Length: 266
View 1 (cartoon, rainbow, N blue to C red):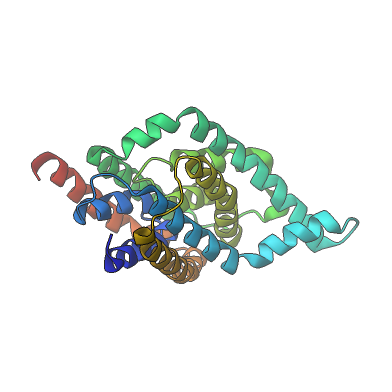
View 2 (cartoon, rainbow, N blue to C red):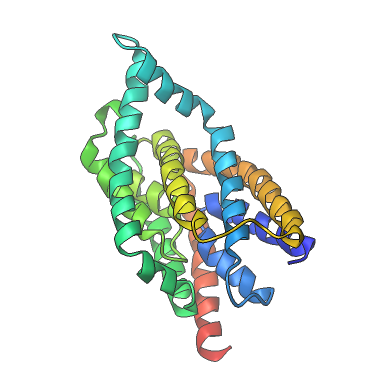
C-alpha cells in the first residue's frame, strides 16, 4: 500500500466513521476503487484505533464523568449522571456483543457483497430521514431507562453490516425513542468505545507484527483517521443539535443507488 492510499483510506475512515454515511461501506468501496480485493487487516485495525483516539479526545468529559461516578458517591449530581451513563453503556453494549459474537461469520461475509452495501446504505438513508419527524424536546439522561439503551445497542449491532452507519443508526434510533439531541449524540459515541475495543480484540489475534513495508502506511492511516475523525465528530455534534441529521439522507440514497447500479451493470 502506498502512503497516499493509506492517507486516503484513513481520511475515508475518519470522516465516515462519525458522519452518518457508513465507514465500513465506504472502506469496502474505497478498497475496491484502489484495487484491493481483500481487506488489509492490520491497516483496518490501525484506522479504527485512530477513530477511537478521536472519540476519546472529543468526549473526554463524558469519560471523566463516568470515572467520577465510580469514585464519588452520595448526592453529587455529576457523579450520579456518570453512573447513569455507565449503566446505559453497559446495557447498550450487551446486544452489540451478542450479535457480534454469534453472527461474526455472517457479517464478515457481507463485506464481499456490493449488493449488501448498496441496500444497507438505502436503509441508513431511511433511518436518517425518519429523524426529520422528531420535533419535541427529548428526555435527559435521568429519564432514559435500560430498555431504550438495549434498543440503541441493537441498532449498533445491526450496524456491523457494511453500509449501515453505526452513528446514523444509533443516533436516529435514540432520537426516535425520545432521547434529548445532545444525549443521543454523546451516548452514541461513548457507546462506540466498547464496540470498537471489542472488534479490535477479535481482530488482533488474527494478525502478526507488521512488516517494515507496512509500518509507514499504518502510521499514516492511524493519524489521518484520528484527525479527520475529530473534525467529523465536531461537525456532526452541531448537525444533531440543530436537528439536521436527515440532511445526510440524500447522500446515502445516492451512493446506495450508485452501488446497486455498479453491482448489476458495472
